[in-house]
Length: 67
Length: 493
Ligand code: SF4
Ligand code: SF4
Image 1 (cartoon, rainbow over the protein chains, first blue to last red):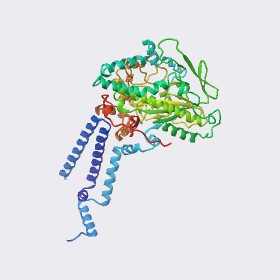
Image 2 (cartoon, each protein chain N blue to C red):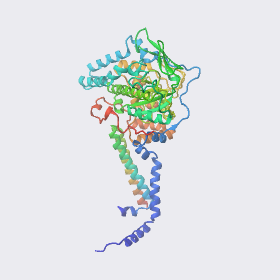
Image 3 (cartoon, rainbow over the protein chains, first blue to last red):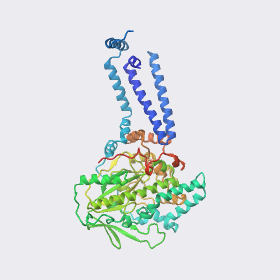
Image 4 (tube, rainbow over the protein chains, first blue to last red):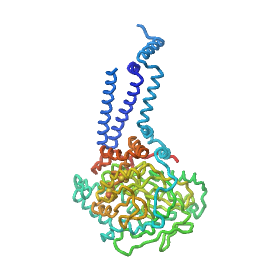
């Protein structure tokens, strides 16, 4: 883990930090929605979180590929 | 085996960092940048997550704008105090030739026999429909026996304007107050209000504009004689009733308004008997709040008048007591519970500090939203973009700047439905649970008002406020009085 982090440059680290916080917030929204009997909102948040997570990974791979 | 010493490890790391172009400073900088950027994206999210534990006033100070003057506007010289003989329930009773509630109850029983949760809404069986109606019977019994919503019950029974059980020697007429400092008294009043079940409490002035001109003792009587009494203000020291009038002393300068929260999920079963049971529970809890707080005030040597729906209009009083804003549906909107609360009040001559009215963007949001108007089964809620000055029915009180609703359509629907209705309360985007996302959205509604249309569309898209099948209440997590523990805010004054 440490090695992975150390290998990242400043821009990448910022990106991953934002990505991680957004994904965690998204997951907390999914959990909260279900706890509040808001099933449709839970599904919407789950889909949105998944989209953000995947887009983030694709973006960082593009950056990597572009050097 | 060769272990890497600290110094060798450090130099190896430095080498690697140098190779990657990442210095310690860059690392810290980038991390800080990432966190700051995140905080900028969701500025209120974390603060809102802590809201559950935060003190009520601190929470409000973060999320609302305090106003120096009342936001309620009336046309001076044109506006008249409201005559409660003209309330929609009174008018409907005269129209039907029987008390409106008799018709509601009769249709409610018919719904049970037809296996329905409400006239147009099926239940799974007659037994289930009966259980829904039984909830209503259990929750409204104390209110119906003791106070009948406070309508026409001014200075009667538990709603007496004089001390009930305060021991002789401690009554206002026996001993002057031992505490007179408004700050200290305000703190004690708010503590007691919470103790007797208020989920919200605020202190406003006694504004005669919001008092009825007269009350009707035989409330909802279908035929004359209508037994009425005027409400007046006079230079007397204690609240007094004569053959023709109820007189409030002009020394009464404070209105303590309390909000009793209603469980959101119950309300979303509207317009069923189950939602109605939550409203009835609100009234039953109100008795404890207004009677308990009034006796507390009297035992401290001051006078108090408890009031539920009687004496005057609770919504404008609540606005001036800083609890919230008036929504399109004519109900109070609060940052804490949205539309889901009932209101009651106690008038007093106790010197208390006034709370300031608030603005949290609700009226602005209502201009765009219209969800209550669209989904109202009786089409009773105004769809006008802007608030108006003119009344829509004889049961409205004109010359005040607000949305006027066709309250007669509303109560006629209740009679048809066999149960009161609260669809407008339930679907309101402000009536939400305690998730931090809702707090963050409320923050955005207040601070970024241009984006209101987007929030309305998102609310619909995410399915918020959708009405539910009544049977949901048998399986939901529930605490005492079906209060949502996460929604009950801590209070510190
Ligand atoms: S209570 Fe029901 S009928 Fe009356 S205004 Fe609200 S939604 Fe319409
Ligand atoms: S549903 Fe919309 S328009 Fe109606 S009171 Fe609530 S916010 Fe206002």
